[in-house]
Image 1 (cartoon, helix red, strand yellow):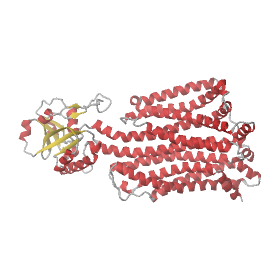
Image 2 (cartoon, helix red, strand yellow):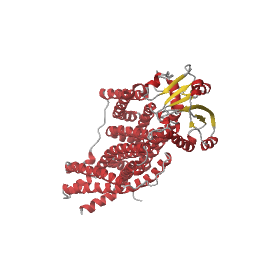
Image 3 (cartoon, one colour):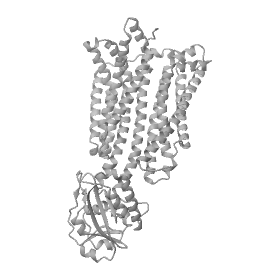
Image 4 (tube, helix red, strand yellow):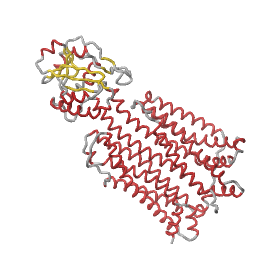
Length: 630
């Protein structure tokens, strides 16, 4: 009998349970998708660069698990708060507390299992779509890729069943420790109104100082590095909570004291509602602001990392194309490209050495980004590359040598700029020539060498990324040539294409992880705010009923609700977006353009946030506004 009554009550609260289910399904499906991408055998068997994507999704799973853990606890405690009075009535009618506790535990597990089943099927669909998109991004073919993976299913089921079980136990303990009187009078607890005082003023000043210190540290993180990150994170977090604890109640009080604004329409009632909510919601709104920053920041960071691959490749290596002994196929591909400049350099390869002709390098110096040992990094920071014009007065220089000390002592080493030019721009590194020593020789010494002559071709194109498929073919043939010189099998050539692909694979995984992690954060964040607002809605029923009885139109009451909830949603949104705009600056240490398309994650956030705001308004209205007969 008790189970039937409880199920009937659950059906009446179906809207609340659906909201909870949506949040749970989003987190479960994304968690399952991360696990599938991290555990799939096709990625496990692939090369080390592609396997590195697994680590990214494992990190995403851990972060999502942490936030989901607290979200599920909070959401279920919200449902418990909605039904406390109902449970109290059951006990007054003779139901034993032990039965109520068991019933509540079963309800928690049933909701969790339903969300788990739906979430795994939705996650399998996501894994199928995202897996294909990711493989297209990194140009990787996996015919055996599985979107429905049993190890991922088991990991997801075990993790969430444990969380649901713990949640049920915690709620059961809470209920068992609550008296019948407290359950019956749950709606009669009132929020305290924070009054002004010296302490409030001091905390308000401290919040501004903390936010200023946090923003300054994040904006100048290149100077302070780890210390700046620690100060920025802690100061911003503390400042955010203090801001809402102090400024929110004071701001609402200021609104109430504005007689002109207060006397307009139902503003007096709306401001009074905000005043009673201000103190109880201040900490939650601080949490919401931080979650907004994390969610939007995750999406923005993913986009910035995706864009960073081509920028980093261009900043690291100037030569777009490097081909040793171009074949006929290479020349055909080059003929289709828009070449801005091209040069050739001659060299000879012996059993132990490689000799570049000095005259070619001096007459046609390649473009480089000069090494600056005094700078704040590897390069001087100049945006435009320069010609390698350093003099080479000696007849012979060694740029790279093996462990043969006699060979290195016979010649002089050139400047760092020339060494980097030969190694990077002409890709004449150890992987290319199997560990041979590399020299620069003048014409006289070069002619004395009894070895076949080779040529290395370098070119600069209009758009490097647009020729990825052609450059991949060229790179494969260059690897085959390097293998003939004894290149180590586990080493890749230091070409711009290889460098771009290595960063692109990591950044693609980071982009997908950041996007879905951000979506999950934002959805759960908005759900928490909605749950908190709705959990106190039952206390407002009498106020709205009283206003309606004295003749206040329903449209005015509805308008008041829209304005009241809009204020609660707007404040953390503004602070959260400000955190993102200031916080993305810290990625400038590792990203060339941390603000790449920053409007995209902000727009995604606004769409999700607006949807939850409208849903909250409708659910709140359904609770507090009196039902009228037609």
